[in-house]
Image 1 (tube, helix red, strand yellow):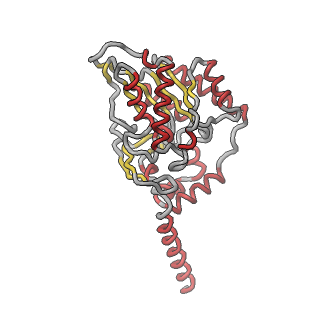
Image 2 (spheres, rainbow, N blue to C red):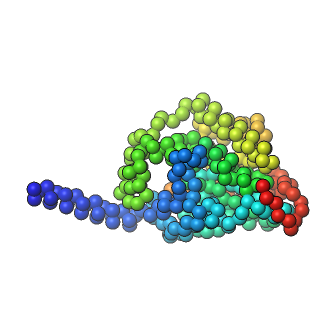
Image 3 (spheres, rainbow, N blue to C red):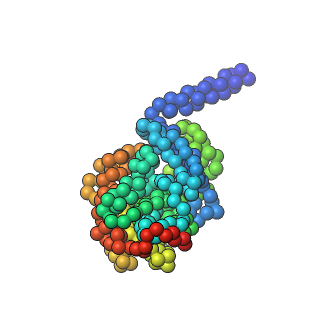
Length: 313
């Protein structure tokens, strides 16, 4: 009995020491504590309205940055669905690259894009950041209908990246199990264990043909939804989710008359920060690039011309 007790105490001590040791190289992944996983929600994940955490990195430790969600449930200035006529409103839909983990308030690329567009256009521009970590294409499409278009944007910028055809976090949640998710949110050791279990239980990736069909369906959806809402839509990418590359993405978007904004040259050297996301310089470069491309695509010509009045959906 004493031997069993000694073994138990030694094991617990080792786990506690390992947990404490991991806090030195690893960040606290505070983002995991401010988004809601809802298995009944087609968009799967959303942010906690009014939440605020001090984030020190998803895996590798970074300088602490404040991550705040406004009262409406998205990152950035709190803007209601009602807005002033004459103000151009651009909504950004995407995953963690748009949300901006590791970037301080006001330093994400949607924040900086707003400033860049206001410099280039002779009218007021608002950019609303609806990026949510872990979203895939199906989640983005659902969020577009449920949470983004009700804000009555003049245009939507849909940002995609290479893992957006993977299973949603809700499906992963079901495959891995609630206890592992709880441990990942509250323990450094649990986070590493969750990654190992998730990698083991992920389904095989779709075939190139299945991926292309899924992507085409996604483009059809966002084009139909934005057209019905009277909004323009632009597609931007970093690395793409199709094996055939950016040329396939450009061709598919072109067939649907969706302007495609490929990544600017040199941007990937600025994406080695906080689990392969933008560093501050990369966010600024990307915002300036997107502003130039959006202006060239006619974004400044959208929307009403009357100023000083409010418009609601």
